Length: 634
Image (cartoon, rainbow, N blue to C red; front, side, top):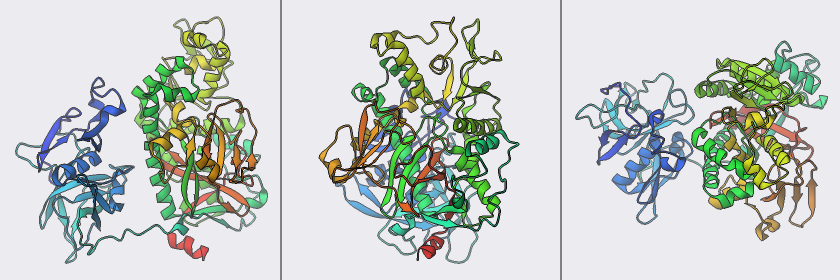
């Protein structure tokens, strides 16, 4: 690669150069963005003639903008840049017609052409997202491209491209482009053409590949052996909680595990990334609309704090969990547990250790990269000081907190554990301190934000004026409570306060309104509509946990399942019923975990009950080749 650029990063939005067709290429150095000019997410949305281009100034935004300005067509929105390789058409803006897109693997006999999109796979420099550039020149021994969000430096005077990429010597008739970044891979190029010669075949998804399979290995006498390291606090706490070295409660299930095809894993990954973006867009929509925010039953005194949290910390979410139904019927999401989600240790550590102990070599662990991704997420947050890990004395929350403590410390961040709040105290400066006197400035918690809000509601006896006037720090003669820690402006809490919104099930009807008939969403409403009665529906409290207070009503208007709990007084939403697949007499739910706003890994919850709850077992999940899964199915 020839690089004639300078080294100095330009401020966000600075024109770095002009691509063919007089299309400006902008710096996307987000750290230098002017907060007064880009005060919210809406300010980062790029439009031309009311046509959405993408987020300023990312690589996808430039590719779509260049195609629109030079050819008058755009491709559909994608969750990640590498997803462009799977697209099959573009849309002509003037009349809404479609034109075919063709994808060609790197090394294809067919060369890219000027105007082609060059795609990089996810990984390394392009971790999570992949990358896209527009090819502007094609020669026998190199191509030139224009792009955004790779380097934030101005082009040399007279230069008409971002960088030059060499062709590798190869077999006759093959056109290979060199990827000079050691940790990335060029997927190939995508172009608008009617000629499909040498193009990738983008086939319809074989629905059988979305089916999960239960398999069982011979435990070989190892079922009674210890396989977790109880010298490590998180694993010792897990063993105590489970009353043994096991993922499941029934001894006869010790050798059982679920298998997922590689295609299904990619679909889960794509869905996770796309849904995270959709939930974030819906969150912003809610925070800009008070009539919608009222439906979340959050005290008005907290609204400005949530809005400020979103403005300042919208990219600081560490991790969350999506719960899915996955089968040959399709992939549907139930909800997004974006605040105080559980089962991270089962996904990132325990199911992998299970496989090691029982020598399971079937495919690979669905959570094998999750722990590393969490560590990298914490490294990017730049915690300045001690992070206090706060949890109550519940056994499940204890091992979950100890696991996260290990992750945080692996990222180089010092931590202190606090169980309960009985030892907290005030110092002379008005800070809440831990029992050793260390001021609490950074917090990761297992408590849900709603727990703090319940304290606030109780203290104010649901008196709206009292809530508005409430100041958590007003009474320093009394010992600090949870609300005094979590709602202090001086304390930075993870997950951020704004995660109250996407974690609240009131977001589900709003998402359905914003994206009706989206393939991953279920019809949801604040009222019981005829369409839901016709399909059957679930009744869910807008705030709940562990499958509590859920009713499932079938198309005959009969209640087929009902759970109890402490959330029966909450407002409710109605969601289209979509049953979990029944495998070996167990209803199986797939959960995916995010790390730093993107897919990190996956796990399984299964139960004889149709409603997954806090006591449902976690089975190991393995990713197997497509042909392996189909052969076993046959």
